[in-house]
Image 1 (cartoon, helix red, strand yellow):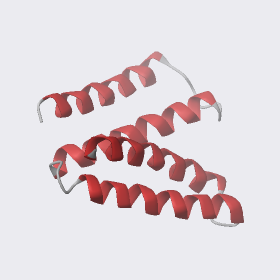
Image 2 (cartoon, rainbow, N blue to C red):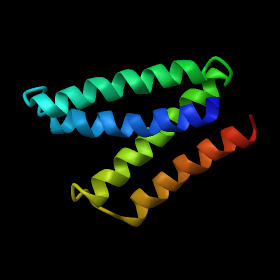
Image 3 (cartoon, rainbow, N blue to C red):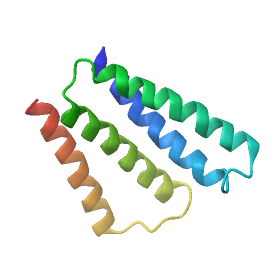
Image 4 (tube, helix red, strand yellow):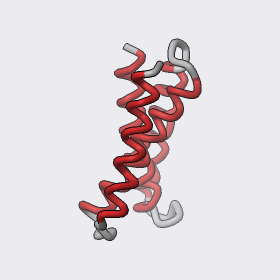
Length: 104
């Protein structure tokens, strides 16, 4: 159960990162509210998961999911550059996260 909560919390990290950008410095109400709710749920889930998952592994998985998800959103929706180097770097993050899980 902790792993499922951690994965959902990582996805919520992507949500709050995107909402933060969309809030335009907290000047827009709805994205600001989405940011706050997603942040609380994401951090709460991370805290729950870390009851049983080692901190190094749990935090790296959480950050990895959030970082890769946010970068992919930026490329797919916001028009961020899609290059072989960027994709390669994202694959390195994913491989590192998978390695930490496998070696856990």
